[in-house]
Structures are given as structure tokens and as C-alpha cells.
Image (cartoon, rainbow, N blue to C red; front, side, top):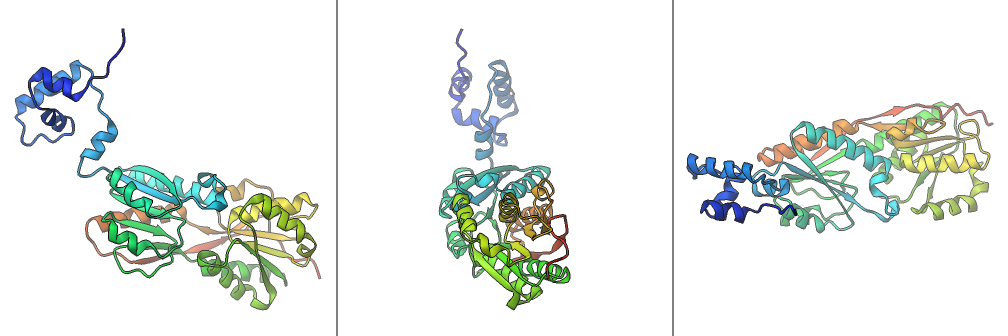
Length: 337
């Protein structure tokens, strides 16, 4: 016998009620409905084994309890944005904090900030956390959307009602530069796929900490195949450097594995470090030295700020969280003269 899903209209017809009344009982909107009617509807719903759509219940409520997380699906991820160590770690920390606060997390990847307006409206979001966009479009987004949102590492003229939650990118670079200099390194290389926003700040800090005249930078391709081809073409130059600082853990590990496959020892021949201190840093061999940002603290700040914005409270428009150096086996004292 085929099982047919029970519909609201079926319940309403059997009880001689409107579908609106039945729907209101299901969604808990019973202030204007008599106790007797509520009881009748609930009993029949149970008898007919009606299974409500959770999405429908959430969307019908004034408070959906849904927090959206929107991530820039940039071409550099090559279709694997959610597998990126920083993105994956950020989502994990946000998931924990959002769940503990009694909310649901909904994730969307896109390359266009304009998609966020439709996303927010479609799912009745209570707040949004935006990761990976480095464009001056947030104020335009604010004009079209009343949903409060927090930005990770945004670069824009903040005209209010938006919180830019960033970290000490410059100071992290300074710490790494001073660390390499104190280890006796005299020539360092900085790896990044761009020289704007976050990556530029990290580079400028690194130059200050290490000494600008002793730092060179390579603008590396975003795609892995092209990046390795680039390393092949510049392989003869790598021996000039004893220290390498990459703008991210991903690029640091990728470079480290490339040179090791070519017979260059890490850290004996060259020290390698990254930024963010994602969990993968402890899983590779040798373990990666990195600048650590507290992902859990950032997630906690993001959520508390969204809640404050929703209540109409004043919040800091620019919040900068501290970072710290984590030393591991991929770096060592310089032995080259």
C-alpha cells in the first residue's frame, strides 16, 4: 500500500477548518485560536502522523534561528573552497558557537556579494557572517538588506551598521620577521598570490620585523599546477633564501612539500612558515611554524556581535583580534654563511 504524505489541506478539510488555522497551530501561533480547536488539530495531526517540514516551521517564525555563513568561492580554491584549511577551520568553529547558542548554521558559497540579498530573504536569516571578500561592496549590501552581518577581514569604508572583524595581520608579520631574524636568517622570501588587503598587511609587517632590504616577494599563481610550474622555473633562485614566509598555511605547506620532493631539506636547508595556524599545521611533516589566530574566539565575537546588532545595540565597527607565533619543526637557526 502506497504511503501518501498527509497535507495541511487534508487536516483542515477533515476538521472543517481553514488551512490558515491548521498552519498556525503547527507553527505555534495559537494566541487567537481557542484551546478546544488547538486540541482537535493536534490530536488529528498525531493520528494522521503528520510530519511538518522543519524548514517551513523556521521560515514561518519571526525568529528563524538561522545564521548564514557566506564564503567567497574564489578561483584560487579551484572548486574546493570548503576544503581549504582556513575555511574549514572557520566553519568548524562557527558551527560549534552557533549550535551552542541555539541557532542553526546555513552555508552558502558564491562569487557575487549580490547573491547574499536573495539568500537572506529566501531563508529568513537572523544574521550573516561573510568570509573571503575583499571588496568595497559592503555598504551597498547594507542598503539593500536589513539583516545584520559581520565581515571577516573586510577592506572598505565602514559607514556603520556593519562590523568588520579582523585580526592583527600586520603584527603577525612583524612577529614572524623578528623570529627569523633572531634565528640568524639574512635573506627571506614572502609568498602570496596578491599584494592587497590581508596579504599586503602581512608582507608589510614581515618586512618591518625582518628588515625591508632583506625581504623579496614572489607573486605566485593561484592554481596548483601553474604554481608548481612557476616554482620549477624559479627553482635555481630558491637557494638564495634560507627563510620563507607564506601568506597562508596552505601555500606554506604546498611550497614545503614541493622543495622537499626536490631534495631540499626543511628546515636544515630552508625554514618555512605560514599564517593562521590551522589544524593541518600539526599534521604535516615537519610540523609547520605559523602565526596563530584564535578561530574560536573569532567565531564567538562574530555571533555575539550579530546578536547585539539585532537588538539595536551599538557595536565596534572595527574589531581586531590578537595573534601569536607558534614555533614548530619547519623552522630552525640558520646554519648557512
